[in-house]
Image (tube, rainbow over all chains, first blue to last red; front, side, top):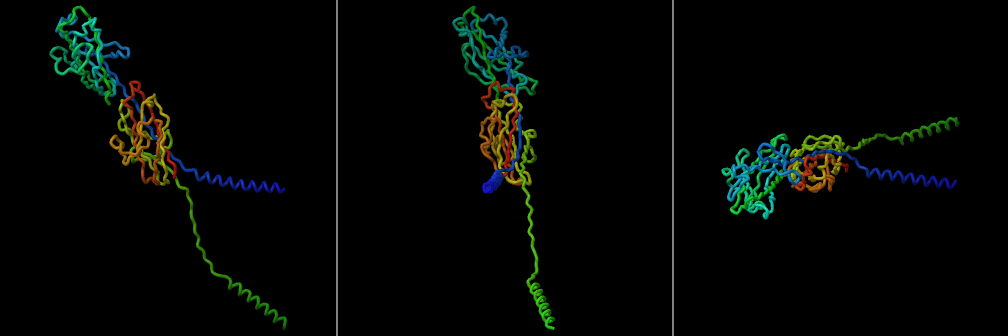
Length: 208
Length: 193
């Protein structure tokens, strides 16, 4: 009987303790409310394309497995494919930002690669690249002023100047094309009978 | 005769006793004090324009932030800013606010984007006002970074906390980021104080 009484006392004390514990927990609680905010973000697109005739544009990114655009050196007639010392030939390359591009760009000549000088005329051909309006004809009359890139030989490059490119007004239109006019000149020591290939690289970098 | 005297004395005694009882009585009047106890409320509301506040209490009803440059064609180097103001409702007790980001959605742009959040004094959240703000999330943080400080919010909507969000596509974001999207929800949890 005495044991039962003691048990009851212990239980009573424990119950009191429990009530205290609940009270303490209640003090720690606080009210909560939240606000939620959301944002959606989309990255733009960027694509430079080129054309050798000013009308048919496509990608020629050798780094991505495309083939380089073959420049159409057609002027002056009769000289192309049969160059002799001090002759100069001209060809245009049009570049623009493809439809869907969302940002403008800066275009720069980004080096050249050419056949080894030992087996070609790479060291006897110099070049200069001029910026022309899209509709202009690339020839001796238009290829004047300050070039955007030059090379004393086909595998050299100096005097690189930035050419700004604009994106199209809408997602469905391409940006305004820029014509790059290439003038390649043979020096007096041009070796006869050699075929020389050169590739120019142009890189556009988004600007905004 | 004697018996009558005794009765009279007893009767007098009784009357005296009654009189004594009456003397002990006094006038009474009372005053009553009453009080009603009501629990307060804690309620915070938000606004994306700094003036029109409403409740966005779940992720499903999140307020769409109004980013200054529409972030539909972000390019490397683009930073876009948006305001989110939070205050208590009226009535509401005061509290503190804690910013935490949710899980980013979309097609993977989240791995490129960084962000920062500052509290600013006005409701104009732009590249011009952002630098003067007080940091909540450090600039250049990944989108899963929570606020490193809490902000006190006054009772009864007396003062609003203006969060200025700055989300950046870093200049180092490569060509792989093109065309990707992502959606981010932020929670600002208020706790009563």
